[in-house]
Image 1 (cartoon, helix red, strand yellow):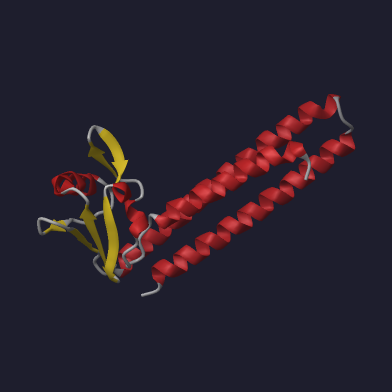
Image 2 (image 1 turned 90 degrees about the horizontal axis):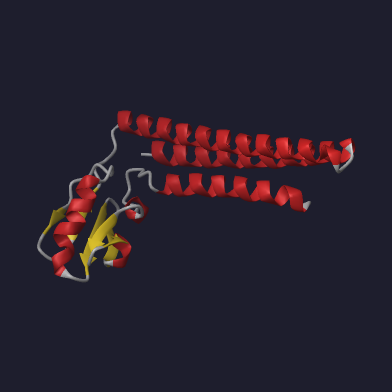
Length: 182
C-alpha cells in the first residue's frame, strides 16, 4: 500500500475501533462488564478505572458483581455508578456491589437500536471526512505527481472508505440483532 494512503487508513481504522468500543458499552439485556469501562473512581486522589480497584464478576446472566479490594471504596464506586449513564442502581451488602440488569422492554430495545444506528452513521461520516481530507491532500500533490497518480490515490482511498463503511454496517447489523434478540 502507498505510504500516502496509510495515514488515512489508520484514521479510518481508529474510527472503526472507536465504534466497536462504543458498542461494547451498550448493554443488550445481559450483564456485560464493558459497561463499566468508562467509569472512574477517586482512588487516593486519582481517577482510576473500576477494573483496577476491584474484582468484577458475572455470577448470573443479568448481574455484575464488583468486589473492591478495599472496603472503603464501596461508597465511591456506588457514587461513580449512580453518576454514570448506565441507568442501574447499585446495591451493596457492605462487601460487594451488585448491579442487576432488568430485562429490556421492546421499546427500550428499539431505542437502543436507534442509538446503535446513530453511532454507526456518525462513524461513517467521520470515515467520509477522512476520505475528503485525503482527496484534498492528493489534489495538492498534483504539482509534484501526475494526474493519473492523483486519480489512482483517490480511487484507492475510495476503496478503503467503501471497505470501512461496509465493515461499520456489518458491525451495526450484528449489534442491532444482538439487542433485538430476546
